[in-house]
Image (cartoon, rainbow, N blue to C red; front, top):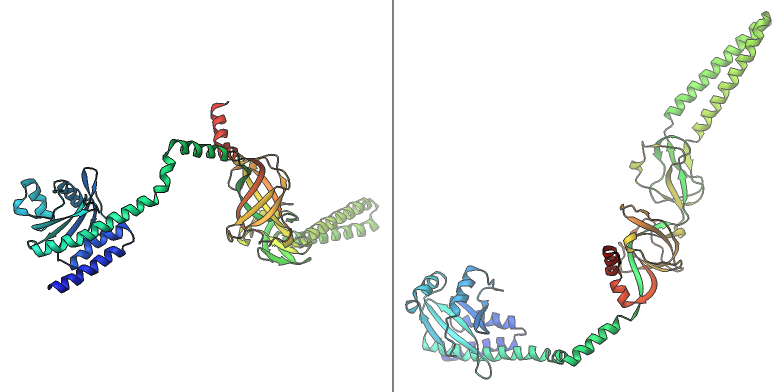
Length: 441
């Protein structure tokens, strides 16, 4: 390679080094881009840390694993490098027996050690270059010139980092530390509003329960979950197969009782003693008529219809069809969309003092960036098990006027705000509660 071409490559690499924005980028340039100036097989960069040289970069690697066998041996080998600030050429033939074994396994035969110096000429590190061919004087001269620029850039970056941290140095003074501690103590007296987070669900505050009118088995549904219905629409039906059988039996029993009464009346014309049987037979007819009327009434109550307009709220229809229900057992709810509110399960361990009309903000899982605001309207006095089997207080809140009402059934997290307290109490309330529970003081 001619002198002109060497100079062009040297200037290009120096420009790369001057354009590096971070120390890591500069290290990468040193161990990889230098290959364009003088070929080598491996390169490794070491920086001075106290009395030791630490491996910080290697050619072909983004980061160096210091616990790898190669890195461990190379770091141990680097501690014996000369640190006089001059370029040194080493051959494996001149190595000690301890170094020659690892050298032959990990590195080529010829090494060049090029130092890195700061602006004052102090030794700050060294770069190892390994090649199969001996290093020429021309190559060492070019490496020395290039590494002078490398050292200048590395020292400049470190000085910039120190300048950025210079504003923190006054904080190390004893007086400033006391001022900072005083500000931290004063910040504990800043008033903040006590709040707590709890799982929540959008429910209907004024929903009407639709219950089973009688004992039976759910046969079919005429509406889907969360469907809009109008007053008089069929909601669901009970299985009427057993009622139809009982109705047929009751009608047949009535026909038999009527026939027996007719026979008793005919006998009474010829036999005065049979007149008493007529009253018994007619009484049995009235009994069967009453039984038939009762069964017919039950058959008419098989279909359940909506009492008002609203939304049918219930679980999956497959959870109900074929399921036996008792009289009065709730099957679904009818709610109006404008009756939507917030139901919160506040765990006993997280409970705080809450007053009615306390602010509530609901963060839905489906729309966490658009919280809904509301006001607390109801709070239970006794804790019960939540759907997650956690002892909790049941809270209900109403959305503020003008708030976009979400769909009933959506879930999220509610933040309930309580009284104003000091920041110190807000931060240490839970630790103090656990301390009193543990110590009894």
